[in-house]
Every structure is written in C-alpha cells, then in structure tokens.
Length: 163
Image 1 (cartoon, rainbow, N blue to C red):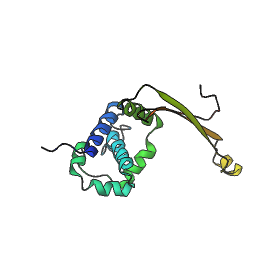
Image 2: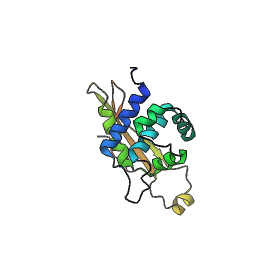
Image 3: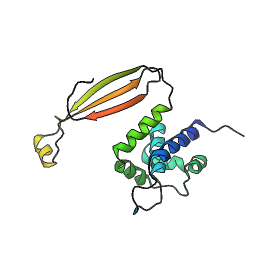
Image 4: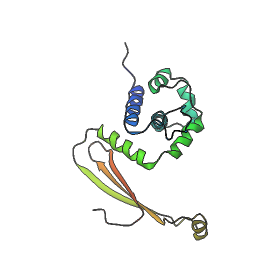
C-alpha cells in the first residue's frame, strides 16, 4: 500500500485541529451541508496550494482521496468557501494558529517584533461616513527562531510598548 501524500497528511492534520476546537456548525439554523471544520480545512488547502477559490474547487474535483478525508459527499460552490472565510471569527483563527504552532518542534528561543499600519490612505470623510473609529493598527508577532513559525499574534489599536 502506498504512503499517503503530503497533501493528504496536511488535510488530515488541518481537519483534526479544526474539529478539536471549532463547533461543527455556526448555529442551529445553518443548512448543515458542510461543517465549519471542513470549510476551514478547505481554506487551509487553498492557502497551501496557492489557488483561487475557483481553482481549489476545480482541483478538488480531481482529488477523491482528499474529498474522502474531508468527508465530503459533494463539493461546495467556490463562493461557499469564500463566504465561510469572511464569516469565521478571529477567535477561531487564533485557536487554530496556536494549535498548529504546537505541531512544530522549536528550539525554545523566540523573537518578538511589531509593525504598524496607519489608516491615512482613507479620507476623513470616508472614515466618518463608514463610522470607522480605528485610525491605526499595531501587529505584534512572536516567532520561533528555529522553525520560523508564528507562535502568537497580537493585534491592537493602541500604541503601547512591546514588553
């Protein structure tokens, strides 16, 4: 019997992590056609394959082992994956990020770095009309120096010292 491909292993790990921490459905009234872990895993596959949403679904049609690993009886429309990504909360992505970083063996040495983005490109009229309160965003990353993986991420709208 042939060993599973790297893509199949990746799919199984993503599905396992998502199933551990994310509820199957976002609400009782959802259609229950595809689970949240399935949609999260499809999005992870999209990123790994560097595909568009349309390409992902097109390629998935030719991957019966991946479909079987995901438990898909039918393929979602590409907009289903796209809309699911927009709907999922940042809290879910943080949990999955932390779980995935625990799979990588690091050396215990981490580096911290921050960067910021100003919202100066948006006109004052637009920010007032769109009721945007955030003027700037600061992103702080904690990265393992050996595995070069993001261990933690912090987003804030206030400018505080990194410590």
